[in-house]
Image (cartoon, rainbow over all chains, first blue to last red):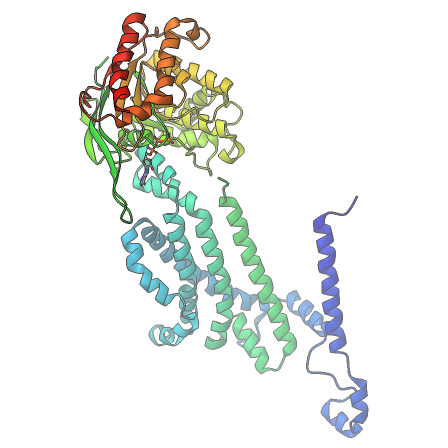
Length: 279
Length: 303
Ligand SMILES: Nc1ncnc2c1ncn2[C@@H]1O[C@H](COP(=O)(O)OP(=O)(O)OP(=O)(O)O)[C@@H](O)[C@H]1O
Ligand SMILES: [Mg+2]
């Protein structure tokens, strides 16, 4: 019997990983030939050995960092030296804060927009105008009015999470099948019960898809926002390590950003499966 | 038994013109009434406005003109007093069979306990032969099973009047027969008032006390109302042994095949929309054929 598709795909994935690591390894091998041409004294001055090492960290170095840092994710040695877990927690807290605020505004507003054609038309120009603005463009205004860098980052997350949730909620609510609303009408269902037991479950997959898109964008934006406001968070960590010229740590941080982003997306994919329905 | 339990007066439905087209008058000046406990079927070709009339009776659609009264009060919106089985299946796909029905039952009796609700639902699930499928989602059911859930949902709220839009359309002959029998039983036991759309002549004769025949649209109207003179305790198995059955059946089929189109062309004249001709076939053969002949006559002249 042939191995299952999943197994074969996993094998190909592993193979690709091997190729990538090998390529990386070869590209960052110490380059002995160049070193021969360099004056040994100069080479000694520059860094000790006759063998010049490229600025790019090798897979082994990144691997070491990975193990070291993940072994102690939550240490805190002052503002410039915190464990990766703490930095990620700061970023996640900001993302969740901004995202929750956005959901609190976008979902009820989306209901109103989706149910009322007047509101839909009235609000549409604003949504269309505000949606394409890069959330980071709000940063100066946020810093000026809120005067707190962390809160400003949360505000930026709020702004960027708002639009996909608002638009999807409005669309999902407006697209609820007339038939189901008619059933609710003939059963004299109260407006509140209709909202929660008919419209919400009917629109839930669309709404959650909007939330998933929002979360994806928020996680993209938080890194940039924290690079700007500084202090704490994974974005600040990346910038700080760049200033320290520690590319090993930068690569490590990039990996962590990817992993967390993937987990967040998987969480929403799971929730989406819970509310999905087949017609 | 209250006469004229439901009364429809001068009902018209006009869809406004779109993109320069003439406005569409689906039906015009329709009058009829239904007594309490009466089972009325309406037959007519596709597009003549049967579903539209039913939606108006349900309170879901506003007529362009005319009034509907039920139990002496004007119908101005949907109500739990009228249970509707829609033409398409309209189950909520995120709810199981049981929960779809429970949704209706809880709407009807909000203070019932959970146990009481589920026992009541179970009774109607059993009735439509879906025992064992209580916890399936609509997507796991066949078309006919979905339709049966819709029927159970409408029956379960025990409305004063049932409005059924081709409720047995997607059922196989066997299931259809079983549910028709059940429907007859329920109606006999509870004196349920029913308004039902069907395309099936045999079904109409089996179930109904009177059959409303509609001419082809647009501007459809009631061509005639056929009284079903077969005894009320008829059953599927021996209904065709009665000679009246074929007379009524031939009359209806003849209407659908040819007269529905011809009668649509007849201009007003002797036709009174308030009192469309009422046909009582069957009892005395000679009288009946004459009655048919007199109605046929003007139509033949005009074509
Ligand atoms: N929203 C609408 N706008 C314009 N015309 C409509 C609209 N809805 C229905 N109609 C027209 O009204 C007429 C009656 O429709 P209806 O659904 O009542 O027919 P029906 O008799 O139930 O047909 P069927 O037997 O196929 O179910 C049709 O000719 C249709 O084209
Ligand atoms: Mg119809």
